[in-house]
Image 1 (cartoon, rainbow, N blue to C red):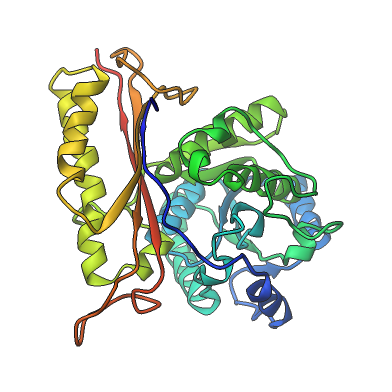
Image 2: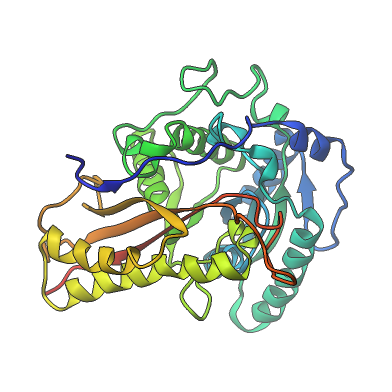
Length: 359
């Protein structure tokens, strides 16, 4: 029997396509006024060398674009600890499986640039009192720049130069998305090599990713410090995600179940319960109340190894995480806000809470 709850899959998206990336590559990149946009590595490295020579520090925030407040919170944290911020915008094809539709991932270049310009204005105002850093460079490479010798492959046994972190990458998200963390680790290694940041910033929402990147940095002696920033949420608790634009009103309301289930389990732990059954039963009681989604997994895992736990060690705590698959709407009501794609795009939501050690 599986140590965590995992259901079958219903995703039947079309095969991943690089058409959108090719379109982005052919588009001329507007140069904003407060930072530079780089499309290739040598020029970015030249800037990095100049910053080193001037004793400046670089905080790096890797993104796939479609920026929201969660991304901006990472940049603000980076600005508190570094003089210069590099932000990457690259929709990485190798972390999309062959049955996941790469072309449907939201691409919002113009609005992303506007948000970053506005944030730089905010950081400039803060710098007068606190010395906060500012965004210096945007790295927006093409797939050819990131994968220069072979076309990127999403096949499990595909050819290419990849970084694999096992067994961490086979757990949780890796069970449903077998190439996902191979793609994440590979692109992060490439981005770290291109930017050589002093510190890199990730959100806690992608908690398995943070554990894997920390392991990669340690095992490969990568000279950067991994910072993890708490999950940014809407007022009602929904974790911010670039994919939320596809939800619409109805699926968004259902999506809140994921947060309620985690909070119910957290409350069970905070009340003194430590057994797997007691903690996860609290989450299941909430998760089973709706029928418009499919639970992929609910996990209670060790914070370092991601091994599933039978009993939580209160001195160490645990990671409580889950993934839901939101099916497309079968039909919409007149005037209903269905989100980007008119409710036809399946959405996979993940979330987690850290069960902190207890005295």
